[in-house]
Image: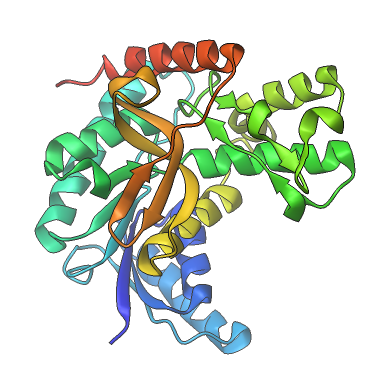
Length: 307
């Protein structure tokens, strides 16, 4: 019997994640959305693409959680994007209700699942999912660092003129303007980035990475979806296939990096049990200060939550 993965939310990010997972061909996928016809239609379209792309995965669209029962992993992308005139606090309050409700229904249908939160504001929504579920931190975490690192890696490849396959980078911290690209741990083909690019060029790439989501919103008029969907699928790969990948994820810290009681982006070992280990990097003084500032910014957002 094939394993089952559920994606909650059939919007652009959710549908991209579903398509990527179907193409992996190791699990059947359920996509759940409250809008009638939307998940069913996207599922039908992706199932018909199987004849062209050559996968056997079955995709099911549903407006309820019955079809998702027994899922090994659930990816939560549900939530509203920030609208014109909507404050940050409004967005937190609105999506807190949505993510809280989704988490409760996921718990009921798949009590042994691992939950990956993608909904924004990402760091705060991880707190909501953990609080509502009561599940251990190893099974509730968020997707942000992989996406931010992918953006940083793309800029590095363009700046150096070298293959993106050879870029090894890591972005820590909150999923916002104060994220922390770890330049000291960034290499291209094993060569430190600072030997391949000027400090001015590096700082420009760091700044562009931090504002990467905003740049795309300005271009598209909405949030990105291809890279976020692919990033979430990579996390599912690591869990379902027990790959033991070291990936930057939004994890609940209890003293690591000097931060306690907060979800932050850090490198983790991701496998069948979820987060199996948090990896602590040796950061230089500037990076340590930047990570503390990022933690302060995340705490500010989390403070808006109702509990």
